[in-house]
Image (tube, rainbow, N blue to C red; front, side, top):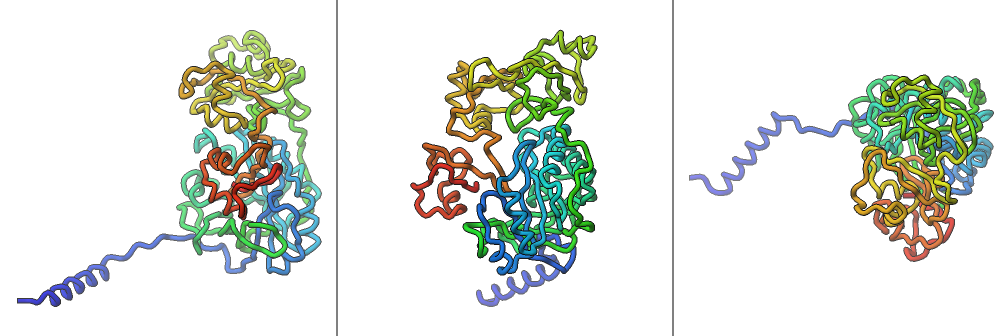
Length: 440
């Protein structure tokens, strides 16, 4: 009869034999594109004034600078960051934060990006940062991405790189994009980014958003870049295309208005614009959006059946004065899209669900429907509109308004007070000030 000890020994022996036969699975990782690497950071207006001499002394070799966002936003520190980084001999890259919701907007954003950096010298690939997708499908996201990337390449003759976190690289971006463009991947708390099934290597690895570097107050993103991030041709960027911001615009998420005029997007002027039909559009909604009538659009575009329009169709529209306004100062119209909720719309336009309910006489805040026209108060809210909200790689930047508290901001973004306080190195959670920029 075997003792208890001998039984345990036998079981352990059997387990060892099993484990020696069955391989232990390991989390796969993607490797750097080369063994030659550079220490880097990426910065935006969030970092404020940077002492690049100290940054260089700290061993940083590459800095990616936020240039633009959407169709209208240029980072307030773009020129300052560029001039000072260049003066201290750092290798420079530029990135754009994409907000486009259709291919036409992607083209306009590419033109805006190139306009902002025209005349500057980039040592590194120009980067696309596309990470907030709203209700876009995966197909739409990849179409918009490819349109933006190709347009920037066309205008500048420079190579591009895609910035993405590991999850989005794995679940959203296509194999087609992976075959065409290298990856600058963000994944924190690991020594090697995980395999995403599409890219075999990375040319950039953002491994933390809480880096501490001499010369920078507060946290900064830390990166490692390989030599493949460098441009083959680092001659000054020349804008070789026509970037007058004319043409098809669709719905501009930057300001809640739809379409752009030839002068840069103010549709509160009498003008003729071109609009590209989006999924779910109807002529009645488009007519309402631009202050015209179904008959006028049908006549101008020779549409025999006003109930039959198709995605991608380009309409010429005579946009009337105050097309997107309700007629009362400080309000605008918003047409509900499939998948919208009142809470998302309120957050997008810097207002509250209660204000939307009250302003629009909504009885059930959980019941809105596609095509419903909502009035939205703008300009008087303590919230942040899409135009005011900016982003850097992996984060949005919130500017504190009068009356804000950390708990309110945390609730707005589904974060905790501790998370926001730690990320922004706030010691007194009850003390924030108007104009302060918070990384979220």
